[in-house]
Image (cartoon, rainbow, N blue to C red):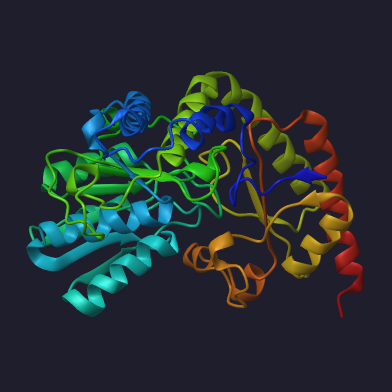
Length: 380
């Protein structure tokens, strides 16, 4: 099997399992307990916090461990907005993840906020002129994802952060897909909050983190014992914190070597598929996209039928966001970049880990081409 659905989840890394094991066995204590077992767990938790902070270029106290990217996004958006709700306007791109858009829609329904959606161009890049005009004195928060989970397009996050600073608007970015592939130094990026999910990096599902600047007040979503400096109550998942921090650190150390190699594989895959299937449509930016992400629409087919044919050929991939699995509706991201709804239903996304081999990419190209051709033959 060739696994090309890493944007949905990546396999757990052996090094991460080994790093977690002590927190699941001898250091099993509650990190808030004042005895030797609890203090050992507390040291493991603080090790994880320092490790993550080193990658992000922030202070350890600015890291909040969460249950994953969805919680991190919800905590950032609801927490920043409710703590300082000036104007009650939230600016977001039209291609945000559901965990971002639905968090803002919750604030609309129950707290009187207004969501302003900024359009994107056909490559999926946010319109900076429109965004800048929407950063008014009444704007509470701006949130734009670092890289898109469906089409892979990378947003100009540093430029957006600069515009937000000039307008004195807090800026959050969902970096769930960017982690491991792009620079995450928050001071260089200029962001006030940044979300990460562990299972995209080789940690188990159910762990993640949020960086939030110490200058920004944050209203907690979960109240109780005051853990995580009062920003996320509940006994911490020490093993999960160690896992996400370890996976993040390993990916960052490997990034300089893996990005050029994997980018070459991605470009080969895109070039060969478009050459063999001229009617295929690449979605997202041709070059300004994640190194390990290729996404297409194949007019005249069914995306689900192509996926089934690919799995028969030993290639596992997806039609888009795993968070929209089971939906019959065309992708909101593809509609936002101007793709016809019928064509959007033919989408196929191939995303891989840094461990992918050149031979696997070559096999995947052949599988995609033959699967699409076979599905077309059967089309009514």
